[in-house]
Image (cartoon, rainbow, N blue to C red; front, side):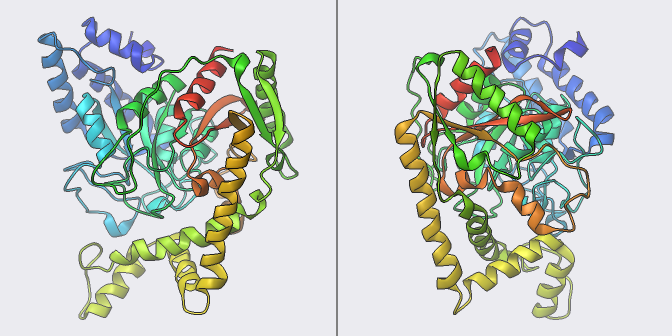
Length: 471
């Protein structure tokens, strides 16, 4: 029975719990044991919250004993990316500068999960401060891809994706600023949802780029992804950018679906096998009755340079707080020594690179030439998507131009690594929801299909993804 547990969906695990075929504590121990045995080779986790998880599970068992009605997530172990605060548990953001930081409160998304009765089992590895596309930038060591241990899991939510792909947890939370949920989901062959900007509160998420940061779920199936999203979405008074999200019942039919294919996403530079796999997936929707229409997103070619001006600029502002006083490594004979020593010893190469680039872009004489111009391009990118989505219901594209690459393959060339975001960062700039669904393999490795919708149209893209899983 234990081996079967790891393949079950959240709904199936819920059935086992309410039928008392397994207790929440037993279920939690099963996953804890798997983490202890499997994570030695994968390194998906930075912290295991065993005592806290078992205590949460014990509470669920008492509720089951009292025949209380439970949420579907009650008793289900879930991992949390280590840039989301979980009260009383270490939160490092993958950085030495926060190595000993203990979270004083829960992030809103975590709080909402706890309210459902979900069991927080541990914190997952990530690129330092979520800056990266491979989870090779973590100060605490890289994470390996469970599908091929010689390759990266993607980033920056590589730990969360690897934890789900290796069946160490049924689901996990990640964050997405330029593709950091969808790209690792694609590389590891799991489902990942980047919600609409504002649909999920960012309160308690360690900020990288505040106007682009999103919190979202990763899971084995689209339905499981939906369950976690439904739990964490909605209004939060602690986040001024957050809005209420209404769940309107809809009747979904593939044969009524209008799918847009952006011509700019099927260009030279994409792996031919990836392109073929994605096109075959789209053709299955067409065979099921969906209408396929080519659309244009003409400013796509500017997305990466636009993104890598806006993000470093916001990074330079957000990371100014790590000065060695309130946060950091406080050593030195003067304030200047503390400041310089803390940042020199506590921050990694990629973080320093983005702080310097962002400070330059915001400096006098360059603000108008770089940052302001990038924001104007961002508006054009948003308008491209708005125009395209007036013609069709959803857009479909590859998540990444390639499959998971070899460890170390792109670490010496930052530009190569930045181009990993080419098919994903536009959606963060536009704030639109996007789903990565495994749609096959190329060269023996997973490929993700990206399904994009209008703002707050998560229900439609999730239904579209669920339809794929039934084809």
